[in-house]
Image (cartoon, rainbow over all chains, first blue to last red; front, side, top):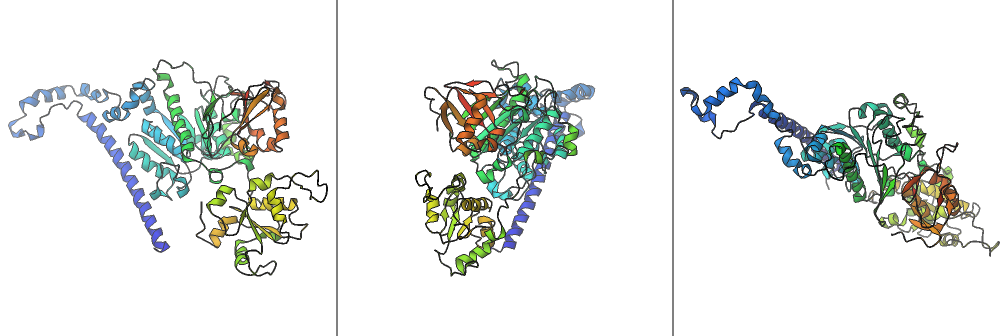
Length: 525
Length: 100
């Protein structure tokens, strides 16, 4: 196996070559573009098939060209505008032909797209497919903003990135893909997170915004910013097998105008409790689910930008009424469209009583993180209720530092509280799986069957299984070391510690710490 | 998963995202009629803790129309609390999904 330093150095070389390559592509695209423009300007009507350069000028100008040359010399100014005889470049007619012939787009719609600028906030599972379709469709300027770098766990759904570009910033990786897809589009990369301090200045130059982010705080920030700047917002989200899509602030009238489209706060005035917010890393996400939502965002953006030039017979004269599209991949039907109300009469952002101002956002007096609530790392247990992975490894291999007993598979019970699907991916030998959802939904107290036997609800199987070995200490492990702590508390509430006689504790840092400190081959999923 | 037609005297309720996780159901049938203002109390009774953990931030719809149950306290915004959910109606509990 190659030593780590070699691998690292190869990775760095590749990354640096890719950056160079990307710069060159960008330069080439720009040079080609200006060359095309120059040529169109210099030779507006170069129709002759005879190359004038092959003519021997020592005998004077060839008769075939003389009249043409005089014509050019005498009508220089009239000839110039011929460059813009057609509003698109010749290659653009070819490239966009399939959408140009749609009455919904047409030449006017294509010009709208070409003159438009869209900001895509977040270049992940939503932003990647959205950007690919928008750049493909010929949006004039596409801005990308994201502060993250590409990780291997992104690649199953974030289709602009690649295995070779793991470690590169997402915006640079996306730019490589997008500029080779369509060099006509001006791509602007912002390699940072959108913050309240920068939101207004970042969004201001764009015509429309796509919210492709992954936290409640960023969703409120983007929505408030779009309302204040009068930009339509296409917002989508996805988790596990579900997605949501809304076109907000459309039409983007000033706050207080009741005919304006609702904003994110009108639909979801209260943020979800922070402990209920699940990320794709924790909850999981199916690639085509988030891909579907991103593609729909691109579609809605195109519809918003070309609505006024739509030539189709079914075009309506007013924007579509606001709606929330819900996608549930495993339900039937898969799509449900909910009709939303207009702006909420007392919306904090877009109503006549709005309290949110540009100053409040930029100065930080409106704290989005606080509004949405921060999750504190779980710290529920006392030191003597916890064991480090190093000490637990000793319990498995050597003498138990707490009880002094010799190692044995049967000396203790190791409970893994990850959900079954994760337990099935990989687990520690000898562990038993009692999913956190089962532990946390068990109602305490379960009265012992000796008292009031007839009134007691059935003791769950997992509880009686643990009760049947009342002397063995219980070690609880999970993925990261949070659910394990809550499970310790719960098991004690359920009386499984026999009033303190049996040790129940958690393995600090969970299986992640186990992999980092003890067993590097334990799968990292 | 398909939503079966509600039996006579019942309405259907659909649980999305976090609501589905909390109830461990994607849908069920509940007894109609029910005042919309009573919906959260009924769900809290069936699923203790659901109000704080899920419902307060949710969008609620009846027959694909958004309804407003949570006002600012002075009643102006909660225009639909008196709406009656009838037999055969389809109610949906839609928590905001923020990841992507």
